[in-house]
Image 1 (cartoon, rainbow, N blue to C red):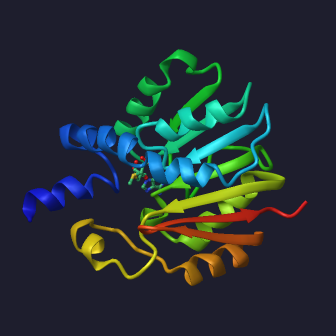
Image 2: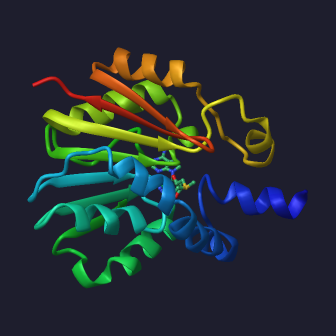
Length: 204
Ligand SMILES: C[S@@+](CC[C@H](N)C(=O)[O-])C[C@H]1O[C@@H](n2cnc3c(N)ncnc32)[C@H](O)[C@@H]1O
């Protein structure tokens, strides 16, 4: 249990050798959830996008493929995640992809910058989620979309027991928090085994 716990706690803030292993693993194993969630979005060329909790940078790469000429920003609290995301996107780094270390609590971007913001398998770890959602809202353009993708949406004690600092929200809780932060047209999409995507729009 000790080894398993320290391995999975690296989901919350990847560090060191185990963190690097976890980032490689997540870049692959989150592909089905992420691609399914991104299929729900009507992408347009030239978008400016942000992936929060970008981990090893695979979602940044996937976003770039879906919008020709896009600019994609990534942010993560973990130094290890930032290093891996930069490496995975090295060919376009600082030209079309920009990755920095920071938290969803205080995003280092101006108001109304992004056409799309994504958060894949990460909101479980954000402190004070309602306040983070307001921060996401602030950096979105009017009419922009926010997509939260998660694999756990019920009381998932299997995970919360092994991952320190993880909170699993129910669909109702997440929807209410999105509504309270000002998002409209909130949609909840669910797919077996336990995938969920929440879409919210900043009103125009
Ligand atoms: C389970 S991993 C998912 C990584 C990536 N999104 C993926 O799908 O592979 C969660 C990521 O969220 C990051 N994270 C945790 N809390 C954060 C916060 N407050 N702000 C930004 N990133 C955070 C972690 O460092 C970690 O890289």
